[in-house]
Length: 318
Image (cartoon, rainbow, N blue to C red):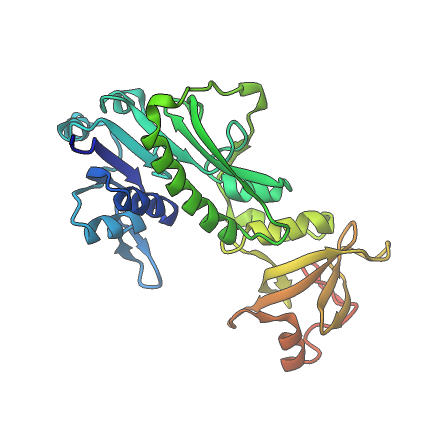
């Protein structure tokens, strides 16, 4: 019986760690793990190992954390592992061709969308924001472009009407692990399919600024933003000049004419706020200095803090 093919794994966040665990559970021979350097995190801003590094250390796997591959030393170290392939999942670096050429059979990427739709850094959240009903995982042979390589395998995943970015992330992470194990087991029978560039869309990186609620948008769009930006960067507005995070909300009809950002009603169902079309019913919120809570609990515990006629956002008046 031949020994498993030597593989390098490159990834950083929990999405990638799920794939690494799936490969290890399937018995693959991971000879080295590449991940981003430890970054400051938490209130103490102490350097923290990535989820991929933490998992690799649990399995006593060699860990490499170059800032980039611009140096001959970094390239030489990569070559020393003599890997057949490198498996890449949310690594955080755009790999140049000289890196892709080092493993004997190139590099495979686990991408969280049905390419060529949503190439880029935030495909999960962009799919929710766009109102897509389906997404999935694509295993592709990497080239020097941004998620432009030939596709080897696709597994689809429905997007539920109440899916948050976090919930969909977790399902796709699991599906990504299943997909790469399936692809490696069937490489001889998989036919590379070129991507249709004319169908490509770009999933730009999330920015904290875009999570600030613009009440002049339609309620349906804002509801998608609330879901997509949960758990990060979290949709937010202002209440008495203090941040008010919105963790859960849904769009509903409203009588036209109210100024966007105006509180229309407050009851056990939540806080209804006027938008340019319809209203957004805030169901779970987080006031400054507090934990997340249901809107009903907030209204009960802080009577008068939010009342019909008030304005949320930059311009607040009764």
